[in-house]
Image (cartoon, rainbow, N blue to C red):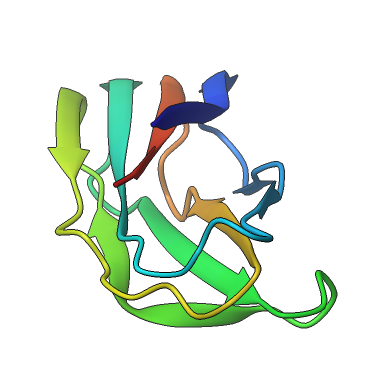
Length: 109
């Protein structure tokens, strides 16, 4: 199952994706994401997966971060296994990147 949670948004500022609610679906599931950069002018941007049990207090997942490449690229995160939290989102941080767009696709197995 895939969900585009950031869709071709300008990559010149920080972005919190929409929240993905895994209620009733998380037992035994794995999650990864693919981040697609287009026209980036810096390799300092990051995309990371966060989780929460209450949709208010967010924490970074272990091993859930990708460094984004300059130019146009697609990078994927190794699946995170045994989902435990109910809510998930992607946080994109531009850092010194000031051009291009970002798309993030959440993959749930």
